Image 1: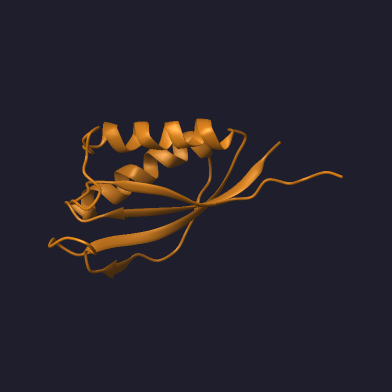
Image 2 (image 1 turned 120 degrees about the horizontal axis):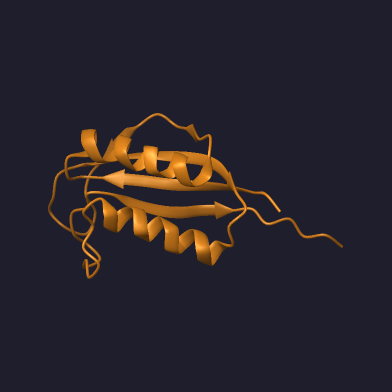
Length: 105
């Protein structure tokens, strides 16, 4: 089954480089993407450069668990430490915002 989903992407370490690279990796994984405009927001929970953020809409046949693993692999491939602490700068942060499964009755 093809599932629509929304992802949040952010970066506050070389975001002009890492967001396009991350989007290219997501497109290879998921196919065509629809992207919001990029917006800036202050780092929350720690002192750091502002984050550049955007929302991506796509479709997948992956389970939510497989998708989560693939997204982590993309983050790690682009400089996110595997043991990254929670409130620290990020080269690339990808979060599942909404994963719309259809329930058939």
